[in-house]
Length: 584
Image (tube, rainbow, N blue to C red):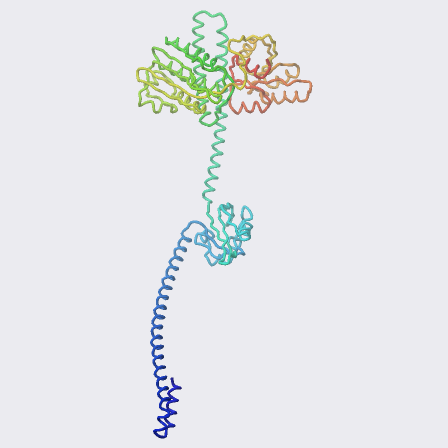
């Protein structure tokens, strides 16, 4: 615009007269219009600049507010993250690729007993004096940085200032925006108290197991010491029944046998209950005659029922199996306990046992055995704790009928081991029904022989008995001679070895606990003799003991014995064992 004005001034200065004016008038008017036009444009530009300025100020103001808000938000998040990191009870740390600390939380500082500035830029060995790990932990961190893969649940024991500490750690790589690994982050949990607690539990468990072992050994010793004289009394009493006795003598002898049986039954119940409580009772599967087992129970209960003037009946369904596979000892013990209880609590009327089959499926029989009586019955409110250990309905019942309250509890535990059920229905003053349901399998072997088979065999076998107890010697000798066999008796394990060297025997009955040399060592020596003489055949050895524990049974077979029987045995059981071992 200044160019046009200067031009107009120049033209005006050069005008000398009116003619000059007319000559330059149009030029001056054109320049004036150009000036006017330029001024309007400049005004527009000025106004636009003002508006743009206002918009710019507005945008700057808004951007400033947004920045302030974003900054405030970032500060809030940073404070929250800092609070989280420093509140969490875990040890949180960030290391660079040289495994030097870049950041740690307060828990880590407390663990190391150092301030943050004393940790940053240093390695673990520089931070913790005397640091020792249960393995090369730094190699794991290097591997995380090298592979870019996280590793979880790294458990290590470290020594810090001479004390053992246990940590479990998770490690993960940290990457930049470009994907480059710039370090790692770790989260460690101090599990020292937990591990110490576990160690205490382990020590307590070892002490408890040692105590249990002592207890079991004590029970085994007590079992042997109690059962041995009892077996002697029962065995000799049974031998006496086969002699000529007058009426009074038979009556006294029956009382003696019944009392001994009751005492032996109580001892067995207590020992079995203790074994079950200690988790030492296991199922012992074998083939047996179920009907023969029921007949044995009938013989025991029928005699007790006659003593009290009670009617007794055993009812077995037509489809009930004979030879089956299962734990006959535990089954017999449960049924006998239920039947004896029924006799005990019944003053008049009857006691009956019913045996039936629920179903046969997958080569297994589901059987039910029910014991019914017309005894005193049980009130409904007293049924709840009936199967608890040492449970007695009331003191009056205990004084009137006696007992320890152990029988039904033992039945319940034994049935649980058999994976069966036990139930009861009772009407007070009328009687009770107890029934058990469990499964037995088809036999693994053929039917050996029935109880009707004769004891005597045409075969004349030579038997070596190793037994230190004089009474047990007499009882076993009587049983062996009933079978028609010859017997040689050794008073201890060493003598048994000497007799074995000089003679050939068809089988050996070996007591386990004997002076000079026990049955285990004697068996080992006999097997050595056989091993050194290729022409000598292996002689079957059957363990014969009053201490029928699982450990002794296992040890018997481990040392080279072939069978295991509890004292007192009956000749039929021995003959079955001989058939099973293919001696007969």
